Image (tube, rainbow, N blue to C red; front, side):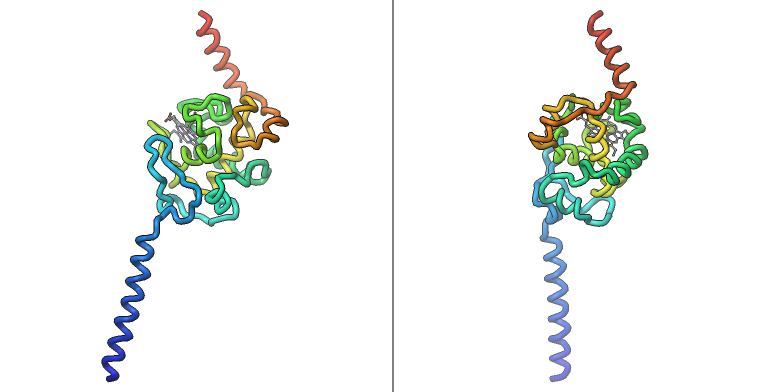
Length: 196
Ligand code: HEC
């Protein structure tokens, strides 16, 4: 009798563990995302079980649920975002996001127009685009990506009506940041060539 009950107990524990394990396996890894994030090129749903682990901050939880970046206009977050950009992005996009090996990120033009929304912007950074633009998810946590995004938005020098991450009201009252010198020079060069 004693042996049987011990055996039963063991089986029960085993079963419980199994149920928990298969439950975890069956649970989609995008469970924390209420917005469906997709790869910008393939359209495949982004699997958030990869990537640099970090604290699920309020900003991350809010972004996963709404695709709204709480760090836009948050000065402390923007300052950290600038530092992170200098380490992770400026080598290819330039120190003022004026464009280098990768395109400028503060102008009106986007290769991927959905980058004008914070959802699309995040999808490109987290999961990558083409060529040298690999996924940045192993370099930066989700929270860090949101901070980088906030800095890039803060230096936007493009047209207000294309700033789709802003609300309509914000767009009406928007003043663009000054255009970086490097970008202005490249633009002049480009226009000269066009007129030749
Ligand atoms: C090794 C070089 C490299 C690094 C590092 C890099 N990028 Fe890129 N990035 C590129 C290239 C090249 C493209 C163009 C890819 C394409 O068109 O598919 C690009 C494209 C992009 C785009 C799309 C722009 C558009 O016009 O649609 C965004 C947004 C972007 N990068 C953001 C970032 C951010 C933010 C970081 C840092 C976290 C970063 N990139 C790091 C090379 C890089």
